Every structure is written in structure tokens, then in C-alpha cells.
Image (cartoon, rainbow, N blue to C red; front, side, top):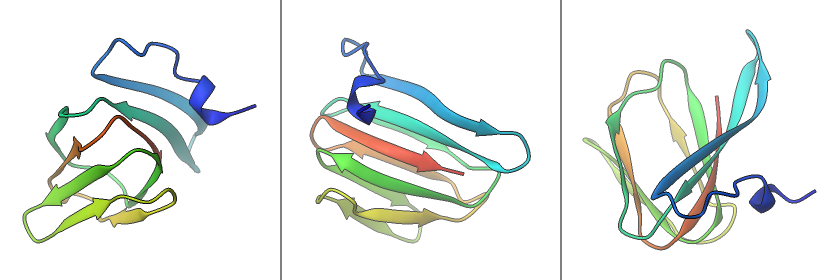
Length: 97
């Protein structure tokens, strides 16, 4: 199997697909962002890791901005910190919480 085949709705600007849901033990979610799309400001209820699989994306919060530009680049997201993600290119990311 290939992670990129799990999100088939390429017409949406933002698409998600939960690929693992272990109640009480965490989740893994694929996130597809089209170029120029902004995943609006929000916060995570838990610490998380956002990993770039393909494309290029910008992670932004009040205290820092991180460009994810090479496959496997990642950012640690601290719980309750308001942030947003911008698709600099069509991108596929993996969110692990």
C-alpha cells in the first residue's frame, strides 16, 4: 500500500483521512493541502507531530514559522498552541497525535 493512494478526492482544497485511531493511544491522519490553501488557525488538544510526505507547506504559529520543504521534514506541535498550515505547493502531510 501507498499512503498517497488513501486520499482519493483530489478536487478538494483540503482533504483528510484518518489512517489509525487507537482510542487513548493516539491517531494518525493524512492531510492533503492544495497549493495556496490555508488550514485555518486552530489548536491541538494534545502534543503532535506533523510530517511532510510530498510538496511544500508552511507551519505558522505566533512564536515561530517553519517551512516544511523536503520529504520527512517535520514539526513538533505543542498542545493548545494556536497554529495554521499553508500549502506552498500541493502537499501531503501526516499528522500524528
